[in-house]
Length: 335
Image (cartoon, rainbow, N blue to C red; front, top):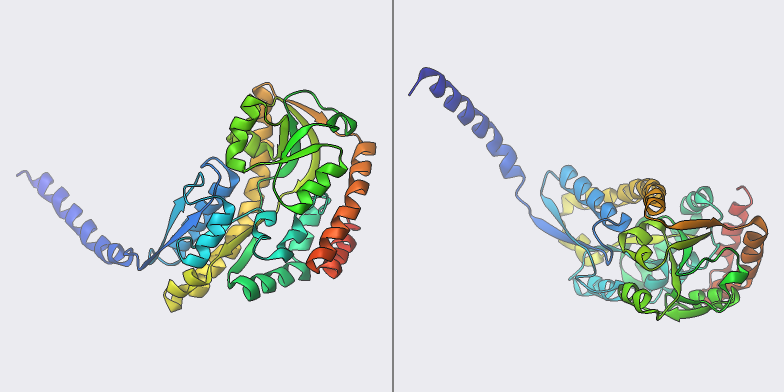
């Protein structure tokens, strides 16, 4: 063996020897399952990637995070049930979906709850969010870590819709919650509840004429293949509560629990900023794919907001959150 080869081998051995303690440190003591019903190119999944990175870095690999996408562990209700059974550790869900288990979370569901991203952040940093965290803990034992988002929701259709009146009679896919049905009836549409996983095929065969979601979802789920038109309603600055189950907390080594929980809270903050940026970028991609975006007039926006006020009030009364709705409205006056 040549002298230079011996030197190279010695250097490699030294590097490996130095790496052994670090490699031992990387042995996982527990693995958390973090899930979403959305695809890997969604803001939901990218948020879980942030969580995985933060947890594994901060625990030096003692806690690992395994990611699941595309509803492989069920829809949002099934994932929430999985948190109680111990088959799901970390997840986010539409507020309306999680409200099936903690009704108070429906406070964030109705259209025009938030006026802007600034309003969204103000509510998130207010006592309203603290009340929701308490309700979640009391009723389910889950830890509410903060909010994810996927952007602002707009209406997308298979024919041009340029005004609020144009929406009348449209078969629009909605979620199954009472707020969604009441809201879209107030707008004059024919709301048609469907599971999110069924929407692509429903649009293809004409079961519905359109739906409402973010630019990121419109692109990522390929809804734009059937719906080439968007009315920028910005009716919902999407709130996706982010949770960790009590069972998951219990199986994390005691000395790492606060670290893992804080990683979740930090993830929520980072994910919102990332998702807002991603939604704007995806809008440009949609335009390049031939999607036309129509701006909602100021008069239509004011009319839509007015139509939603009774829906917001009825919802808050139903779930016993009238005081909190008042706080949200008061905060909104600043924006």
